[in-house]
Amino acid sequence: MEPKSNEGISIIPKPKRIDVKQGQFILNNKTVIATVPTLKKQAEYLKELIAPATGFELAIKSLNKNEEDINLIILNVEENESSPNPEGYTLEADPDKIIISGTTPQGVFYGIQTLRQLFPIEIESPSKITMEWSIPCVSIDDFPRFSWRGFMLDESRHFFGKDTVKKMLDIMASLKFNIFHWHLTDDQGWRIEIKKYPRLIEIGSKRKGTNISLRKIDGIPISGSYTQDEIKEIIEYASDRYITINPEIDVPGHVTAVLASYPELSCTGGPFEVSTHFGIHKEILCVGKEKVFDFVQNVLDEVMEVFSSKIIHTGGDEVPKRRWKKCADCQARISKEGLQSEEELQVYFTNRIANYLESNGRRLMGWNEILNDKLADNAICHYWNEKFDEVLDNARKGRKIVMSEMRAVYLNYPYSRTPLHRTYEYDPIPDDLENKFHQNVLGLEACVWAEYVKDSKRLEFQAFPRLSAVAETGWSLKIKKDYQSFLTRLNEFNQRLSFHDVNYAPKEIFLKDDVEP
Ligand code: ACM
Ligand code: ZN
Image 1: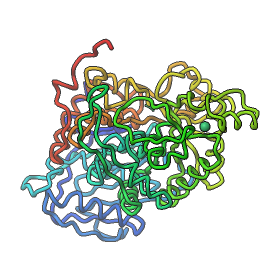
Image 2: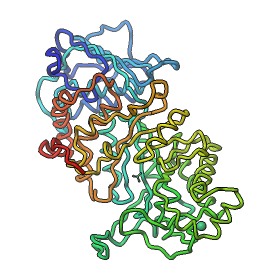
Image 3: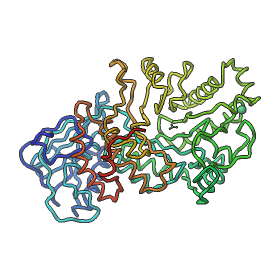
Image 4: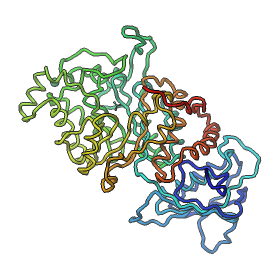
């Protein structure tokens, strides 16, 4: 049970410390947002957050220490490069003023998200409501447990588009997520414009349908892609919410859409079609051919021009070696480079790409299949399934890891298989990992794979409320986590989502017991 003094305070993710004080702060149309020049954007964001429901157009003034400080929301930053918690903030609410401060603008932004949840749920209303806009007086000190709090969306299998992505980014921001991993390429569709290779869109972004059985296709064409300008717009939207977008270009497997567009990049020459079925595909990039490296590097050049993220995800999952075993070019590469096996050929490929990214000031991340004793030290491992001991071993040797255990945080799975409590109880730090290595686990990422997630409504149904659970794991102290308390707070958070027309799964679905797989 929550302490009684916290009644009415319902924040996800749970802050590190909240003390409830006497009284309340009442917002009215005379309330002033007082701030410093570096927080102008944050002040505007807060003003726009409050305006629709309250009808108040709050004035924004510069923070003047001599001013009569009554009826103010103060946003302040005391920049400190060596702050141990750059994403942290404090929030002091008293009857006459609220003060949010941080050592970075990002921390202040998270303080604003907490303030938002201190207001009555109606603050989320897109249209004006006449009521008292009060918040309880509190003292909050808060910072995240993990620096990596991510969400991955697969837009290859189904394409959702800009508005859906922006809506997801908005909700992610309210839950204090800071990474959006954008899975933009796969066997069933290529979704990012690459100017040097126009056929990736002309051919690779379209499929004629989706298999409904082994030999039957539904005949409903699926297509969609983003121009580089659209992607820049979304990156800026995310950046305004302190969310970094890490793009994923999945290579050397999951590339049927590439090979349909440029069959000469395969081992066999094709022809190929953009895939209409799911699962692991045997056709992969021919790593024996130098033009494949030219292609990947040219694509990454454009990706790096559009995305400023330090990290570029290059997939590397589910790479069957059947084609490489029979390919003269791949075998010649294995001999020439003195490699022991096709497995080592994948490491050779990954390391070349990792070095290329590093020479451009970026860092490679890949799914756990990239792991190998010979893998470049700097490559980040994205754990999803199997190879768990190898992942542990790598964490002990200093490799950085992000955790996406499929049984817990693959949110495309049905609730009957991955119920909310399993997602909530998942901890990204493996039980067997010694304390001194915990710092190598950067955090966690929830994933929505979209094979069977055909539209935004379904996406929202799969993501919520489980993404709210992942937010709490990413941010809140482990000892502060409590499922019953979470469920109580979730009830309120879901009502907030309702104001934004989010199609979260109902209780009858997300509270279903675990069933054996
Ligand atoms: C994956 O689920 N293939 C990373
Ligand atoms: Zn080959």
